[in-house]
Length: 533
Ligand code: G4P
Image 1: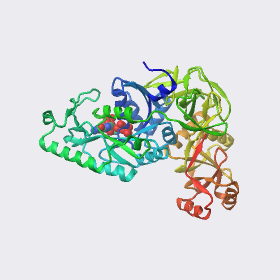
Image 2: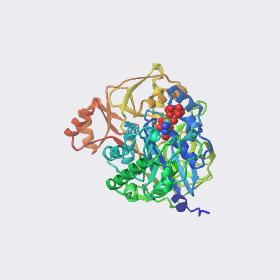
Image 3: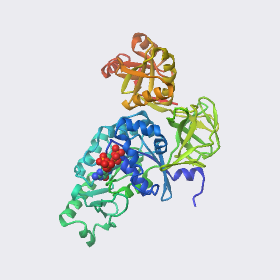
């Protein structure tokens, strides 16, 4: 029996996200983690959701049909005495800020690589966000049942492209048709792989000691020699796994497997349980003074990292995803929003057990609860019992795509402003108002955000909009003294804008221009991220 103190409960939480490039196998791995964790019974439950990446219209439809992506945003399962909270990042190939923000609520990330492709562009982008937040990363090299790159090449890539120390805990014997299994480098045990047609049951032979006669039933002498040589070389070349270095974000333990064939997933889950950190103390301010909120603190606190609208146009309700940072949350509890002082009774919080929604009776640091509300909660809000705590904000990322937005019916121009502000507050897209003129510039990190936006503007606000090319390519938040910002602004009036919070933004025509102005205005910094909250 566990002792239900906030500290003990938090200590058994593992809250993590999976980062990967599309098609590397995130959906398949998620499904198999849930299977291994006992949260679902059959393969296919998550797969159905994986279909959403197929086409955009499907994605929209699924979003509208609801339930699905809300309940799949967080998947909680209890395994081996631990509570795992798997935070889903959108599976679509287009990026959205949701993906970034979700990572701020994760304590660790599993990076899935396709063994034949190594590190792909989106892996790299997501990795950079993890690095920004010092999130420790566990690497799962997937699809070993297919022809793979040389494992040395793969770990070299991790070292050179990510500047992470690779620490393989396992080493593969072959790949594709020649894939025989993996060697557990620490226990010197070989885990044989059996090709199976079925994907939903365990069926790989039991591990055997490397130095045993039984090994010859799995590996011929050549294969054994090759495995032993590879294992020896990698142990000489790579630093041994150091949990501390991993927690600090310098080192990544590496697992090899095949999510589809349910191989190596157990080991990954075991690794997550053993090495991924439980929630830690979070920096915050209380009534303006800096403080740390420890998971075991009595006061219930948390921050909203995502707000999801209910696509049912008859209901304007939203679900805010609150990552708890401390205390013992009980259903019915009253929490206060720090910046508005508003109090809400959380009577029907939602907790996400795999594919079902359930009412949460209690929750602890590391858990995520969904709070239905009517626009009271915004992304970045800090909630607590006293309402005095404020967590360091969630980042806004400099948009990669900027568009001018126009409404087709000019009589509705007034409504557009309100609608755009609403969506920006929710974090769907970012909004910039140039100082001169009456344009609205919206920014996103992924194309999909514009489509979601257009869909919601028409469905919820009855506004048909057109996105046009904007004469800007980059946006940067200005930081510096008021006088310096004013001086800069007066010299670049046509390129100045304000964001939703009234903060000064420089809209540049090119990345080169940013370099140019940064040199000429050395006292100002042109920030790529802005902390919200
Ligand atoms: P994603 O969420 O990262 O985009 O990837 P997803 O899990 O949907 O997997 C992408 C494709 O890779 C799928 O094939 C999936 O079956 C396959 N896959 C995932 N893990 C493995 C693995 O360990 N080994 C092999 N051989 N394949 C794997 P698909 O053909 O696109 O879809 P489907 O027809 O299988 O549904």
